[in-house]
Amino acid sequence: MSKLPLSASTETARLLEERAQLWQSRLLLEAVPMLERWCSRAMASGELQVACILWLHLALIQRWRKGEANKNSVSTLLCSELFLNANLDTSGLGTRRQAEELGLLDTEIFELFHSTRSRVYRWLQKSSPDGTERDAVLEHVVSTVASSPAREVAMRRWWELEDSWDGRGRFAASPSAPLPAAEVDPDEDFARWLSASVASAPVEVNVNLGQLQFRQHSVTVVPREVLALPEFQEVFPQVDVNACLLWALVERAPSRERYRFAGLRYEFRLWKLPDEPVMEAFSRKFPEHATVAEEWLSNAIAAVPEMQPLWTRGKWLAPEEVQRRVCKSAKLALSFGADSAVEPEAFHYEAGGFHGEAAALRSGGLSEWPQRSRGALVQPEPLRSPCGAHTGGEYFGRRVT
Image: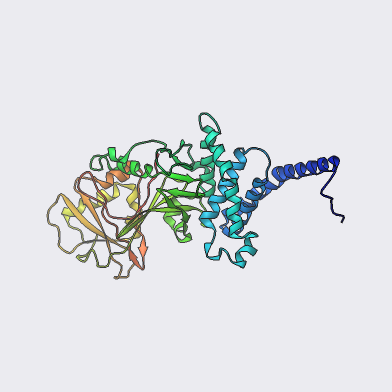
């Protein structure tokens, strides 16, 4: 093969230019859709390494694309960088194994996205006067990277955080129904307060770092153990156990961790098992050994459909001390399995029907589910209640409408 001299003729240069444009058009019109389909399949089946390689190929094609940035190129570059930063195994960065698997070194990956960052940022700033194109692109990026079901994605307004010293290049989504949590008193309306507190957790696309964040917390992959939970599948039946769903740890307490799902208006709260048993005085089987004064408890439980799984799946116990008269409130314990080592969970009910947390559970669409931890029932802290009574149990998810 003869080498082309540096002083090529005008005709040769024109021919090379035509061939380059032809290859670019074929890449954009034929190769890109094919790679996107492969990428979707890899993400749906949980093949993160394959998906990372495909996103890198898509980003490389967009990097050498001539002309100004457009909606498709910005979306692809953002999806590629955000997905890689959230899912790429960093333990092998800089090694020969990583270079062989991805086809690029970590320095080349950094240079790839750094060289296109200003182009992406300029388009996000000047895409359209009303910002609708930017909103559509950022919403698509979040739903794609987070593997969110299409029906869960709602259009929101995205704003650049220009009011802070480090706000340039950081775009945050405004809640679909803005309601500051500080303006809602949990003692007056628990369901509205919970809805407002979940909605007030901002999702943020940080173009400077190429990361999807919640309250400046980076997202990570949701463990498959969580995706395989029966309760999770009941809330998200369309999410496969191998899906690349993302979440971020937004709050850590001594006995609780709170995660926010990316692209979904849900939270996941994980409670830790206490060091000491919480309930020890529950020994009477309920309702077999219930007294006449405790008959109202069965009616109260049967009145709430959300409590039926707990009624049928566990063993209910009453305090050893027999209740001889109808009191304002009563306590029951729920234990799973025949193993006596399983610590029971306490449920508090108020006489005359369900109030407090139970009322919020019925009207607000909450899902209360107990979870196991090292063979014992996870023991959550009691939630606040308007009436002073509360229901124990694992808070699994709350959808913001």
